[in-house]
Length: 155
Image (cartoon, rainbow, N blue to C red; front, top):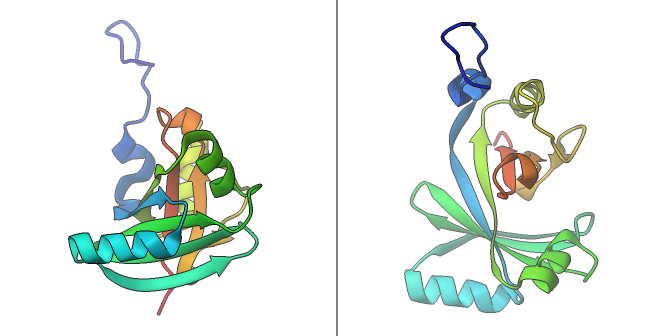
């Protein structure tokens, strides 16, 4: 909705929806057919540093995080063809799969987005990379972009 001069109908601005909860771009996720080859490429070509690797059997993904400034890129490979990354690679091929926003409180961020009418993929946050809490905003609500919310684990 838009503000009209004859009535006070408004839609909350993004700042009103998430306010200070979003603090940074946490990472950009790249779907890749071979995680080891992608690690070698990004470390050799761009001088990025591998900071974390893990497999998430529940989500069917092998992932690697590479540092770039105060952010990261996430390389995502399928552990099985029926996983979300396996389906993404089959349908679209390698490429950017998601952008992740770092949040201070995933529960608050998720509720504010739901209150603004957006659809989240999970009812409750799930465990993500390195023990973080994650959720995703449906791409249909974000102009075709899969947006991940990440609350980093306390270390």
